[in-house]
Image (cartoon, rainbow, N blue to C red; front, top):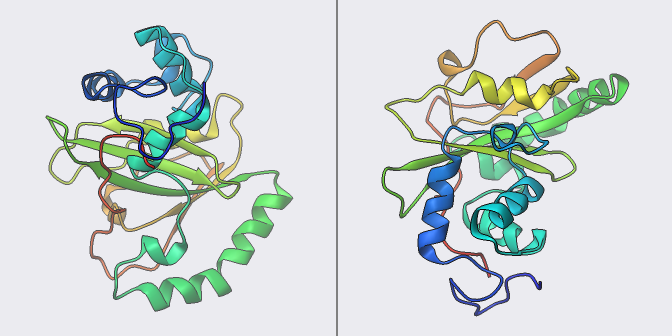
Length: 213
């Protein structure tokens, strides 16, 4: 099945109808792949492709599913895009002076580096937040939650980044959560690094429904 093409409309072969997309988002709220019997701890393009096949008896390749993830606001971003307008200079300085030490430490311990953030999806009822971690190699892992007022970063999400193998992970936190909303008493193998922030909440551009062209 070819990936979603420019101009392809929702519900055409290789895509989900709007009703299916909304149903899928609801099915993912607060639920991880292993609860569907899938062999992953957080959602990825591959596990989401498998769920779509099971739930809707519809074959989509990972490229087509990736188009939905891009529309939802997931994927690699430049560090400056994770900063509010007042903090761009500080973030760029941090990338030059602090980030190299993080990558060296990760290489020494065979660890993964993730950039963590949050997107608010438009067009869903109730609202949906997508918490995502993008590795330095561009791999996206995510979960969907129903937001509350000032929702904290889900502890379970951070623990699942490390996995059952208890891998060491370095997690770079943008301004989506103030530090008092970070999980506490995490295992030492999980190291959180804050991006410079003036305290203003920062999120990715709002995600939208429908595949990205």
